[in-house]
Length: 132
Image (cartoon, rainbow, N blue to C red; front, side, top):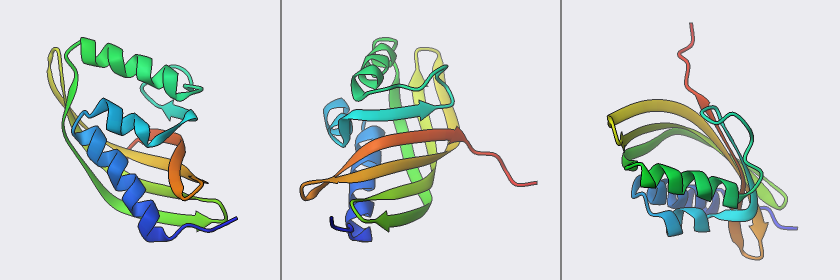
């Protein structure tokens, strides 16, 4: 196996964040493996593949949802043989059918090497809480 370069992980993560920020469905989901799993604190259960997330995404879009802004900070990249873990703080503003909402979350994306390409195989979002 091969250990990816941290710069390649940063580029793969930035591509996902940038596509999300643009509400670019095709480009966003291209960063994820078809069998990627997703754990979102806003959803009642784990999404067991990309198709499950794509269905929810389409429901959001149909309701008038779109991303207004999304920025990443405080990132950490941990590489290992065959993949990497990317974690960061993400600040997002979305437009919903009822107006705009902003939130801060912590996100972890696990990447695996697929040939010479890094592909996301798991994403986990949790609410950001300030330390006491």
